[in-house]
Length: 134
Ligand code: F3S
Ligand code: F3S
Image (cartoon, rainbow, N blue to C red; front, side, top):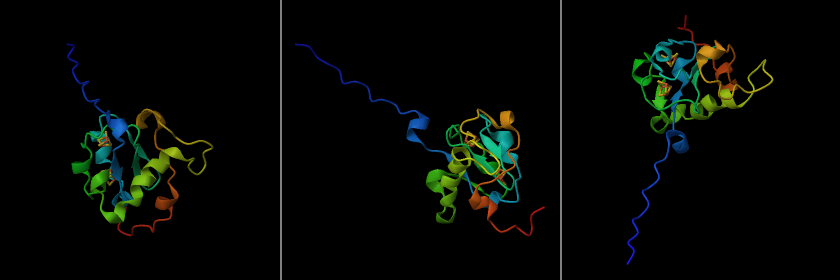
């Protein structure tokens, strides 16, 4: 009799699970940038009024979350309801052409390569200016 062992369960990679961290509204006009120094894969990109996490590059390490002084960063499953739109919006920053650009940013491979992008999604650009921002 031949005994067959069950195949080991396939382990999903992080990107197959498609989970990521998200920068939300509290970052707008604050842009402390402490998160950038913590990110081991340089996947936090600077727009004009906010920073954005590339969901295809983030390895979900969570190092950025505790250093943000205004609690703008959340694991996507932990996003407060008021910040839910920012999950799609962080992805949109990379997936759709930004103002003044013909093509989407896509997956540039690190914010150090692109430098400051200097443009925002419509959600961020249309947000009222924060009066206490520098
Ligand atoms: Fe913004 Fe907080 Fe990073 S304010 S730039 S998400 S440290
Ligand atoms: Fe970087 Fe934060 Fe993701 S440190 S890898 S953006 S969880």
